[in-house]
Image 1 (cartoon, rainbow, N blue to C red):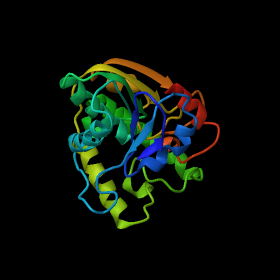
Image 2: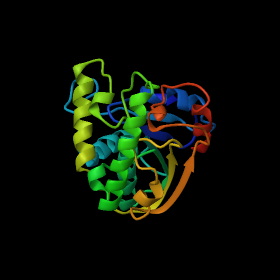
Image 3: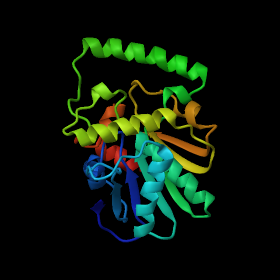
Image 4: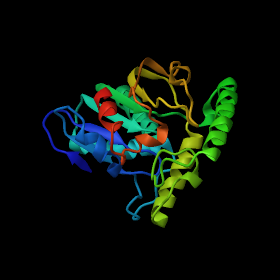
Length: 241
């Protein structure tokens, strides 16, 4: 789905878990780049096809669309949450085929806890317990999300088709094991401690050859990147891209 039309190399953005291109309308309004922007729509979200249940298959599905719009590089890829894993896999495939990836942006994207080393898993489990205690005594800040949350129960869906896409995405997340990406990536992290790892460098430094980590500079949690939100956080985050 084309979100904005401009000249130059296009920006292709993959959505969070169970989400779609609509997540990015607010972000794109604040992107100060002279590029066309395309939101990549998950397979099966229209209900006519079975959704992908492997990150590698999602990457292949998206790359077919990307190559139709832009047969040659350089490519600019971005992804939020689960979409960051897909964008990473897309970049890996493109580089292995000799294509130029000019920029890879991962927005608060992490592999499943089962893919982390034991010490990181234990640290994350402790962090999640603390977050759930805090959330138990505080009212939730968000009510409706189609992408990027940490458990299926946290996501409100409007139709069975979204549930199918979401469930397939959860399966893909649980089974995905990233391999070394011999390129560079820019990682934009949440500033608030959430149920996701708090140190992206510890997670990704041995899987991505060159990693640059940035944050919004505002108080922002993982779910706030589900970019239907408006307000102070979206514009500075867009400036980081």
